[in-house]
Image (cartoon, rainbow, N blue to C red):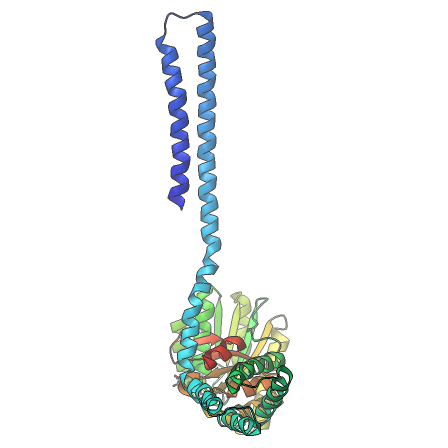
Length: 389
Ligand SMILES: Nc1nc2c(ncn2[C@@H]2O[C@H](COP(=O)(O)OP(=O)(O)OP(=O)(O)O)[C@@H](O)[C@H]2O)c(=O)[nH]1
Ligand SMILES: [Mg+2]
């Protein structure tokens, strides 16, 4: 496209130049010179000057066109990102294979075995959803809505139920939470990562940090899990891999003190995002509450201006256990979102629906593998599409 514009400009210039030059040569060959011819020569000189002006103008136009094209190309970059989206969706679909097999294929099995829509069909659907960890309450709510919808739309064919159910799941998930986007604007932002041990907190922090660094953000990771030296080392490795700064104390140190130091570092280094790991090995609810509250107080006092997220990490493979953990953490902390890990290895992806619909906890991130790039932002539409297609 650039070449096409350039050649077009040059061709016009050349043609114009040839026209003027041919005329002037003819005039100059005809000596001696009459007053009329002198006047003609003056006119030719003027024509040459005009020609130079035109060429100069056209050169400027050429430059302007090139600049314009460069701008257009720069503006087109986000489109490339959109083009990458099918890759993300494919990865999501692959990650959700087991869940899809469990929910979608079983639903199809039920619907194909009925000739008409009756109460038994609803009961079979109910069973599929409950066993896929959608949760009893959410399943009941969905089936009630589905029943109403079928009545309202006078649906007769069981095979049409699939689309209606899909739509009701999507609607229920979306109306239960307001925002699935991780909020780190305006900068600076602080993300406190909580959750019981082994769910994937450290791995998620590493992946998240890598994502932010790729977007050009200045990231600091704080080793707030001081229970084991190995936990600190593991987090350090992730911070090295993602290119983030790292703040840690020794094993057994007070996590609130680590967070305090990390905030001072974030301020001094003008960081965009501070991500704090925390320990999962807290034996009872009041212990957990005390520890987290101490950290919250430090953040509030020292970093009041920061945009805050408290992300609860849950392991999708634990199904209903993840729901129970979410209930406990909701009581002790103001959880702003969930990172649901290990969705790739489980058929219990239905837990996503329960977390949003029943606990009104927005899923903000999902882990679809152990690699540094295996973290995605969550979107209800994509999720429903991936498990039903
Ligand atoms: N397949 C898969 N594995 C994951 C995912 N996220 C984390 N893991 C694995 O889960 C295991 C535990 O992850 P960690 O990040 O150490 O979990 P943690 O919550 O920090 O654990 P503690 O520090 O012991 O409390 C590791 O083997 C990770 O590789 C995921 O999305 N998919
Ligand atoms: Mg950890």
